[in-house]
Structures are given as C-alpha cells and as structure tokens.
Image (cartoon, rainbow, N blue to C red; front, side, top):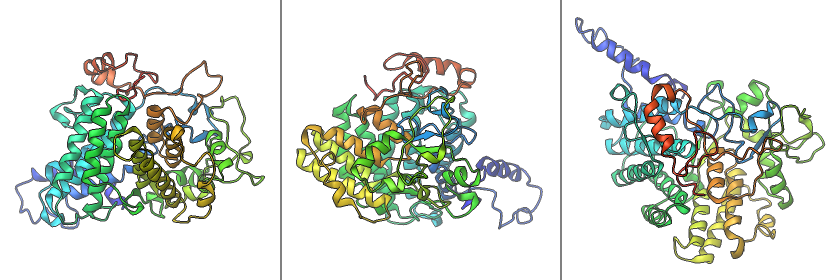
Length: 479
C-alpha cells in the first residue's frame, strides 16, 4: 500500500520532463513497469492514505491537539499541549496533499479500464467534500471556490463557511446522482464497492446537515431529509474505516508513538473515564488500560507542565487501539443513528420521542459492537443503567454524551459536536488564566505573507466578530 504514498507532484514533474524528450522513439523512453503518469484511481488511493490524519494530525512535526479539545486524552508529558498554547495551525498539508490529488483525479479520469469514469469522479468528489468539511470546521472561512488551481491562482479568496457548506452539499449531490453499477480499481477503503461509497457520501451529507441545527434549522432539516432519501449507511460494514497494516510503513499513529518511539505520553482523560466507569460501559476496557493497581483511573485534564505525572498511576490509551494494524473509525453507522435520534427529537424527521429512542438505543448497541469487535458482553446491563435509559426531558443531552463517547479518538469530530451541542459539560484546563476551550483554530501564520489581502478579508468577515485566534466562532457555532 505504501508505494502509492509517494509525492504525487514528483510523478507529474517526471511526466512533464519525459514528454519534452521527443527526439527518440517513445518505446525506448518508456518503462512499462514505472509509469510516469498517475491514473485517477491511483490519485484517489493516494488521497485515501491521508484519511487517518483527519483523526490525528496532517502535520507530522506537530503535536496532537484534536484529541485534547473534547478531552478524550490527557498528556502525561508535555502537558502544556492540552492548555491551548498553540493558536495557529497549517492547512497547507491538506490542500497540497489529498485535496490536490483529488482535484487532479477529477480532471484526468478518462480510463474505463479502472471502472466507470463517472464512478471514479464521484468517489473523488465525496473524498474532496470530506476533507474540505474537516478543514472548514476547524478554521471557518477557507479557500474553496478559487482553491486548488495550482499556478492558476496562488492567492485564492476565502469563501464564507456558509458558502463552503452550500458548495459541499452540491458536490455530494453531484456524486450521489452520478453513480452507476461498476466497481473502481485501486480502492483501499471499500475495494471498489461504489454502493458503499454512495452510502458514505449521503451519510456525510446527513452529518453536515445536522451541523446547521443552531444556525439554519430549516436548511439543515431539508438537507438531512434529502440525505436520508438518497440512502445512508445501514450497517457497521458500511463504516468508513482506515485499516492500517502490520508493517512499519503503514502502521497506526498510536503504535508509532507508544511502541516505536516509546512515548507513553497519552492517558485517557479523567472526564471520560469518570463518565464511563460508573456505568460499567463495555467500551471502557477498549479505550483504556488499567493502571498498575488494576483500576481504571483517568488523568486530570490540562495539567500545567510543572506537574509531574506518575504514569503507572493512570490508564494509558488502550492497548487494542495502538497496535500496528489498529483501525481508525471516521464515519460510522452509529454516528448516523445518533444523528437520526437527534433529528427525530428536533422534529426534522417524523416520529418524535419514539423514533428518537429507537435510533438512540440502536446507536449505542452498534457503537459497542463496533468498538468491541461484535462482542455484546455487558451491553444489556449497560443499557439498563438509569443515566443511559432514554428520557424525553434529557434526550438531547443523552444523545450528545453518548455520541461523545462513540467518537473517541476522532477528536476533531468530537470537538465539533461539543461546540454545536454544548454537551458534555466540560471545563477548560485549570489555572490557565481563564483561557476557554477553543472554538476554532487560527489560520496558518504564513497566510499573512502568502495571501495577506484575502486572509485579512476573511478575518474581518468573521460571522460573530473576533480575531484570528482560538476564541472566535465558526458560522454554524452560533452563540
């Protein structure tokens, strides 16, 4: 798999150089075992290799931050990382990597031997929408309509987040309408099964629609219903999962950190352990290891760097989640069920509390089965706990809290849902000059120099005011 993870720009540079050498017979200059042009499905596959970075970090030189905002993990070392000291983050690796590959794939798709061309383009559009959704939910307004033009435009304007969402809904609509029967090649996610890609695109559409619950419920409901009609995930086998391999070059990020680099830097946080432990949540033994005394103990969140942590006293990230081949869950059936439960409670779909409860209960069941490899041990007892039993008066909070648990290790998604719903009730890092939990991430500092005019216009147009920092809000995060 790793062979496809080579810098794609080198392939196109090589292609440009060889195409200029026309004084010789083409056959002499062509090595059939080393093609100089990447096909559309190869470009798509290369972008797929970046999918787990959505849950960790695209900048391999940077620390993990997404896991800290929703307080899934606490640091045992370098604890200042969870105290919001870093303000500006770079989106350049996302644009220059997977997004450029996908844009090129849409442009060059012309080989029916790799599967129906319309399917190749539709898959590329779904992935493009997914990566851009991640970007806009972190930064807000972003380069969109003028982005990915390469030399055609090095200083793209920023589109408002509302415009980005509208554009992504349109992109997903186009993908959904385009699919025809026929598998595509080089697909390392669904092995070419376009029926699963179609359901993934509509599930992303559904989850995006729910983001509008505070800012434009009318449009959110309409887009939500459209996604349901078009067909979303129906089982856990439909999940968007990135399956790592049991080898060094394709291993899980957490294996690299814990095992290869011997960095026992991440314990499961006290907020999530304290929530799960009294309920005897069957997912906790997967999320966390017991400490040296044989207990599950979460580490206090956001400790200052002056505090020395005795690592053996706390529960480190679960061993099962940091094997070489541990999977990364990105978009899941349970996630869609939680969304349907909330939509029913909000009145976006019919059925009220009855339908909300059905989807809420099924979401928890499917979450447990997902995390526990289809083992339902402890599920019945867990579902019978009073705080877990669906209650109409507290349903929105219960849905949000159980979704928070389900999204463990998908930090940026858990953070987005916390910002939208306000649940669970989290406290910021203590003794930190009253610094609140971040609401967005600051733009790359290089943008001031590289794209200053458009950067300044984007900051001036923040929907609720503020500066380019962690405290201003994105459009859907309405105060």
